[in-house]
Length: 68
Image 1 (tube, rainbow, N blue to C red):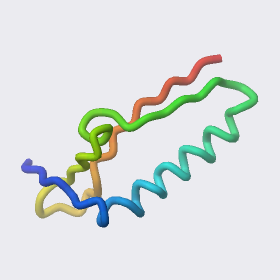
Image 2 (cartoon, helix red, strand yellow):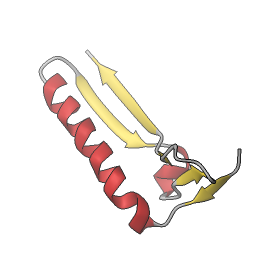
Image 3 (cartoon, rainbow, N blue to C red):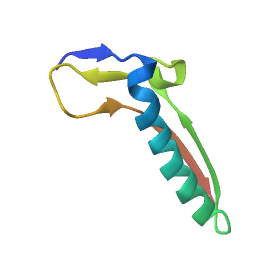
Image 4 (tube, helix red, strand yellow):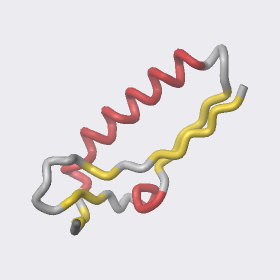
């Protein structure tokens, strides 16, 4: 499968939605766990990709660190 890079204007809103969902989870787990997250891989360098000719969405890779 081939991938292409996506312009920021295309992935900005879906990324914000993903980050908002992560923040909701973070808030709900705050009393139980220490919770950290960050974009990983190409996403950490703002190089978001998607499969060419596909409707799979964007490739956002996150790293989660959850400690009790």
